[in-house]
Amino acid sequence: MTAFCSPSIVNLAKALLQVQERLKPVVKDETNGFLKTRYATLANVLEAVRRPLLDNGVLLIQRAVESPSGTVAVETRLIHCSGEWMAGVTAIPLPEAEPGSRVNAGQAVGAAISYARRYGLMAMLSLAAVDEDTDNELRQEKTVLPDLPNVTYEDALSENGEPIVIARGQTMPNKEALKRSGFRWNPERKCWAAQSV
Image (cartoon, rainbow, N blue to C red; front, side, top):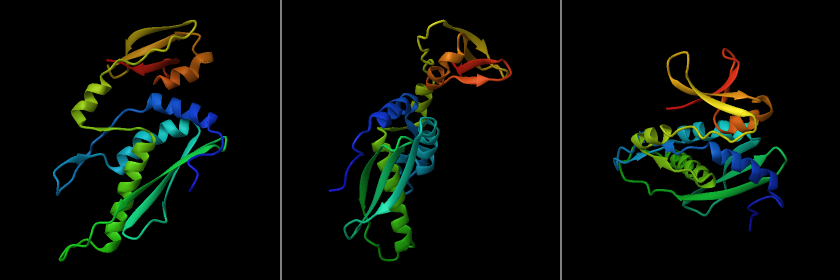
């Protein structure tokens, strides 16, 4: 049996905890023409996870691996900069070719690989896909303000009139905690700011 993870995942687990704090549900951005259901595309899932992973020193690798006949399998591997890793394999049955179908065998394999990549990654990071209106409600939640020593917060408006929260005080020693909470350095104002409602 293939190992699920490196002998230790202490550093990777800490990094993934930081990733989890930043991840939001992925918006279903496409409609299945046959079933008329909505789903999150692979591109949308990758866009949602790539920056939080990279900011925390975690590399994502996905590759097709050997699988039983009639299936396609994809390994999703998360590798921390410490060398620690964890992996999972998602196997998808290949659909039987339908007579008269315009989809060739290569396209069917490609679609199954994309499907396995999407669901393998979402399962590995405990991500959910939500409808756009649900996502809008989730985005409207207030920024969680970390309780940091000698840091205060004030409401303000951005240059284009959007409500923001500004962190004041001893922010530089606490910049990593502020980043994890969604704050970004604003060079014009020379302060840490985050979106608000």
